[in-house]
Image (tube, rainbow, N blue to C red; front, side):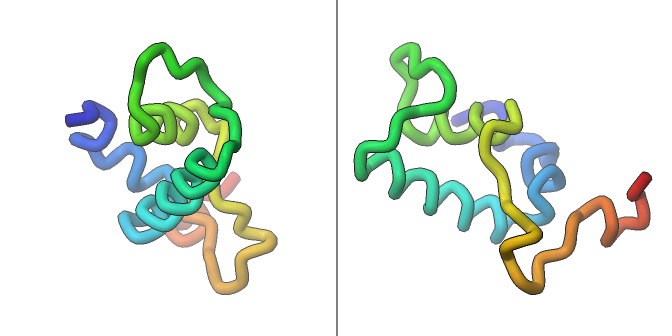
Length: 80
């Protein structure tokens, strides 16, 4: 199992399990259709690459373009 998925860090970073799942599905589709990984593959599976891309902040959810999606920091009252 991918270690990053054992903790809730990645879930909280995106604002929920469903948003994480949607982002992974979308990115997986891009990789299958020929997109290049944004991190070194180093023999890792597509899922491992996607999780690393999320953790490094290379991909995420564009909340400005996505209607109805609130920034997790705002929702929790933690904005600067």
